[in-house]
Image (cartoon, rainbow, N blue to C red; front, side, top):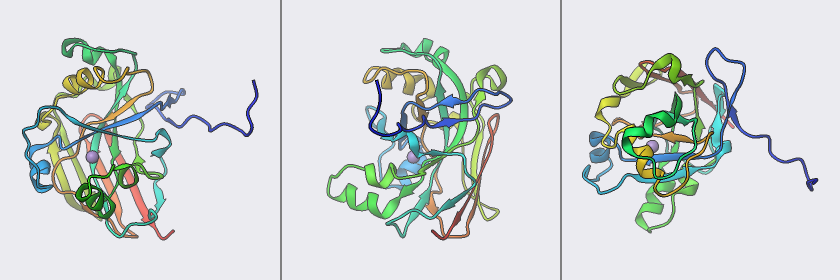
Length: 229
Ligand code: MN
């Protein structure tokens, strides 16, 4: 078989203290998974199922310097714990869910909030507000063999040295095993899938020149700076 043009190189993420990289298959995200953030967005923390949406796999980036995205005047930061799936599964029971985790990373679910507000208002999809180029800056993956499973731990984001977002993994409305179990009842999870687990309160605007520093206990740090395009 040959292709009309060179196929996309599979997007991938470094793995801490390893030569082999983690090839990214799909990026699933959970919306409104911390009570305080749900309230700051005008929502009700009690909902029957997690809210899932997706980003294209090539939205991941490990670059520290990024051009300010196109077509927005209100780019928002959402710091999130990302779960890297290492074992295939469908209809995974909650009790077995953590067996499917390869490791954890720290990610930003960057959001063009102005476009999302319009989409929400008119009942349109979120793709252009959430799934744009380089919308998922991510740290190297820490394998579970090193980090253990993350049941609790502080997660935070500073902008230019000032803390904007902070929360604790133990405050997730839908826990990591529950997210894996429920998502796998809708789609088959496979090696290479990433799941962003939701952001704590304090989301806000990012301007050109801003330096973002994310941190999560047991996972490490993530640095991003935005420049003029
Ligand atoms: Mn998010």
